[in-house]
Image (cartoon, rainbow, N blue to C red):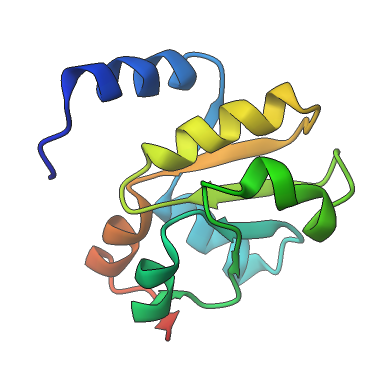
Length: 123
């Protein structure tokens, strides 16, 4: 676990109070079931290039508010965001909700939890 600053954790915890969270296991179940949703990686591009969850799409946290409508224009679509551990994705989920996206969640545990569970990835 990274040593995050108290101020960063304060805003993450504030966002987590307003968003829906899921976890690595539930997302894997949804993928295996063939559920229709958008799995969005919000990490930095360098992180994405090293590896990401199979069939995920990339929209970095730094540009997600600007670019989300170009990739997902249906504000009612199910969107699951993930980052390295679930903090940046929580912040991004909060902002997407503020933009009117109604079915957004953040994957707690993030990519590191996905890797730890041994689930499939691609580069």
